[in-house]
Image (cartoon, rainbow, N blue to C red; front, side):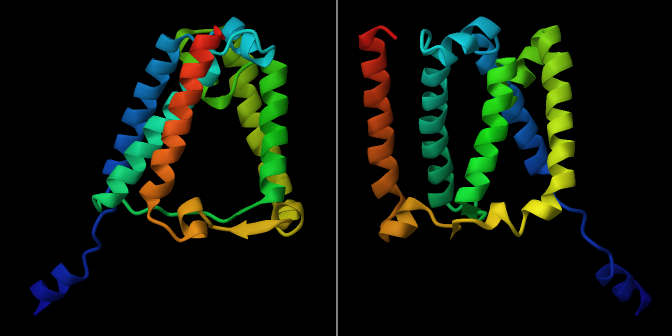
Length: 191
């Protein structure tokens, strides 16, 4: 009887494989950011000044690839999406924090990680410190913000397919097609 009880009372260790998959894909994405040149300060500033559209092209390519990959894995039953609710307030605060950091330093969080990997001191000193400081300030302010501005304009965990009551691919295919057309137009226009 004790053997049976001891076996049934053993807790199963959490599956840590997704963490390693995430780390692997993060490293791969950082490598691709580096190879695409978007970890260089001049390229990012060129995007902000609308003279170099390398960052936009890489991000649009990543959105299209990610959208196809995620919805393919969802349709195969390999993953289940766990959506978080959103609000206008969350988007405004997030955009302000992201935009100020991006404009001041010339890096976004992904490109900071890639630039740190390249050994760029501005990314290490300004970027890493900025991320840690910004996260700390937000964590301190969060209890005051969570029931106030962050709840303003709450729209829940809605997605376009759910909103239109259609199959995911009815939205994914046209959005990816629009992104591809936009990428071709950007290339032909010489941006």
